[in-house]
Amino acid sequence: MTQPVPFVDLVRMHEPLAERFRRAFDQVLQSGQFHLGPRTRAFEQAFAEHEGSRFGVGCGSGSDALVLALRALDVGPGDAVVTVSNSFMATAESIRRVGADVVFAEPDPGTRCLDPIDLDRILGEPGAERIRAVIPVHLYGHRADTDGINTVLQGADRADVHVIGDAAQAHGSPGVAGETTLTCYSFYPAKNLGALGDAGMVLSQDEALCERLRGLRNHGRSGKHAVAELGYNSRFDELAAAMLHIKLDVLRQWNEQRRFAADAYRALLNDVPGVELPADDPGHVYHLFVVEVDPTIRDAVVAGLKARGVGVGLHYPVATHQMAPYPSNRPLPITERLVSSVLSLPMFPGITPLELERTAHALRESLLAAHEEPR
Ligand SMILES: Cc1ncc(COP(=O)(O)O)c(C=O)c1O
Image (tube, rainbow, N blue to C red; front, top):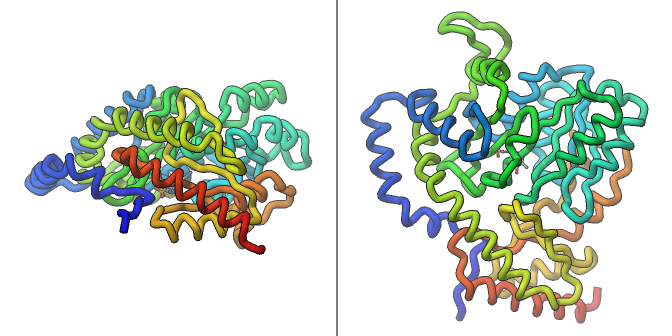
């Protein structure tokens, strides 16, 4: 029997770094300091520089990073925030967690990221005066069109609307962090840069905003026993900082390996009928390699891949507005079509050419079989 192809293999990815992790663990243990210490500050600075930004504020998760960003911009009850529904639910959740309303925009079917044309429509709809921010998601590692979003905001004379980037899936994608007021990252383990647990960060060029974020992540404190505003316990662990700093050294190389794998998939799959490949972008960092198939056979194709030993993911099979807490009062046909067509193929640094070939072969066979099966 041939070896299965894992969807992602963190053990394989971490193996060459394991000795450095163990040494770093010992150093943190001996330091006796476990959060918001020198390792956090060093990693915040290193990551901000790596992403072309000035300041970084580490926090407990990518979900918290989004909440902290909205709070730092004073978004709250009575306000509305525009984002997409074909994302991980944490994006919309953050908006609701600060008490604001979510307005879902459609994605561009090519990039699968927030479509500036639909944002333009939203800005002309009733209630648009309540919009205080837009959160484009750099979905799967493909950069959202932030230039287009800024052009639309300027055209509508809405300088009061902030753009917050959700870059949870786009570490190392050039330019992403410089384009928005605040940019939020997740270091969930399977991300392009993942911790060995949960962690997140907000990046910004604005020192005053970062000072506010530093207070908010630590109970709203302005001093040891002084609290300036309602905050959170969302501190950054020294262990996370130490491990992430080690992994930051290989992020560029790992992203190149992802791009290499994506190029190989394109070459292997470009003549397969019925498969829509992701749009390329020179800055794409392929957190996921997401193809689209006919929605009526998607589940059969997924089952076929699994039966052939190939790991497969769905990102995301249910749109956020289809989940109970996040109803949309705008119809979202493009989003609904996308979530029923997408499937994610194995993608991780270190995936071998043989694994890529076996995945492509299994996809070809599963598509053929699904077309032949009675529905
Ligand atoms: C697009 C997006 N936004 C936000 C998050 C939330 O990040 P976390 O899981 O670190 O809270 C994630 C990841 O899980 C994500 O993929």
